Length: 386
Ligand SMILES: Nc1ncnc2c1ncn2[C@@H]1O[C@H](COP(=O)(O)OP(=O)(O)OP(=O)(O)O)[C@@H](O)[C@H]1O
Ligand SMILES: [Mg+2]
Image (tube, rainbow, N blue to C red; front, side, top):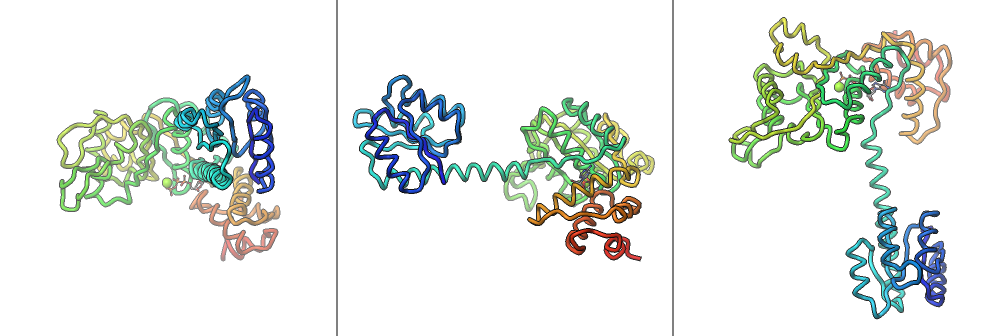
């Protein structure tokens, strides 16, 4: 049940409010003045505070300004006497949730309190969802390869140096990019991803640089390109090896000049973007075969991070399996499954061509299909099918 703090120097008011709210099922605490209220507010977590304006020691306005600074989420409802409606209105402007006048109209007061607790739970819910959505998954592993990557990420994150992340499918290239952004000074700005392989070549220019209304048949509205969306943040050019030569020329220009031009637009727009690129191709080989521009390669690869394949760091497999067993069970709302030693050993010896993504899928499959403890037999039945 929601916890309410009543701060009022009038004993009769405190008593009446306390009785009503307790009857309604709220947990109520009382404070005799602003100073005592402030102490309780800092010590405990309240869902709503009801606060009088005129009180000795610390008045309601001072309490409000301290409390909203300390914890802006807790709604504060001002109780105002006849003489200070104006002050109450002022309080709402300064961040109070609402005010009720003395003597309180019961229905109105209960509705105001319910609205305040509803808002509070919405704020909390949104925050957990946001945290969940924004949180970068941990990079699991203690192998030399992973440690080297983690050290490099720490060193380069705070700089604006461009990074080229290479490695096979599913090794964690995107995860590396996310960590570099998360640890950089740009973390409060967006990380914008462009999958260069997935966008049709004729649209890539408008995707990257945006377009003005009417610049081509389907351009019915002005459109902000990824470079502009990423302004102040990071642009992640995924599968950069699949970009056409003509797009490469335009990206090169944007990187050289720090300016872009929207399709169909006249003016040059400055953008402040840090670029991280990733590819599973051998870009130097692509350069040799004239599929990739050497000058763009050099622009992108100030820092090179090669992500080793899972087969090159099998010692990380037990930790990864343990982590995936936990995470996936949590997603399904199930208890975590155990895995037998010989089953784990078989996974460690398997040829992982799809790398970590494949391992994660296999663990998910085992959670769904195997019994409460995963045995070697399950690996033969569901993973290494001969
Ligand atoms: N070291 C790691 N610890 C835990 N999970 C990881 C690790 N590396 C990668 N993963 C997970 O494996 C999956 C694949 O990683 P990611 O998408 O970063 O790979 P990728 O190299 O970009 O793949 P692709 O080449 O297919 O684009 C993701 O779910 C990612 O969170
Ligand atoms: Mg990827």
